[in-house]
Length: 139
Image 1 (spheres, helix red, strand yellow):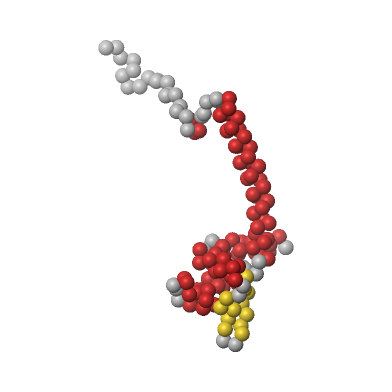
Image 2: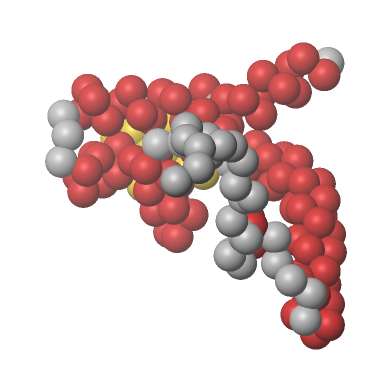
């Protein structure tokens, strides 16, 4: 069961990785069902090329198609997107806590005037000189 959940989540994120597919989902989310032609029109690609994008969305469960005579209508299926949002929310809580802790640390350092490390943007002192070529020669 866990494997199929992971595969479904992979399919959703893979589908969302393309700007054309994200645009299709956004348009479907704004106004209910649209025909395939209405969805394809603003993308300036062949209908065959657009159908490949639509198939990826459909396989991820994000879009469903219905045929009424010769008209094929697409509708948004929100459940897979909600599952992805739940998965992301767990990591959002984790990173929000980490970033809040970092912000508190930086604020505290700024208040007490603690020096910054070399990676923090402050200038590091030059390394001490060690013997190099000619270091032991007298002039």
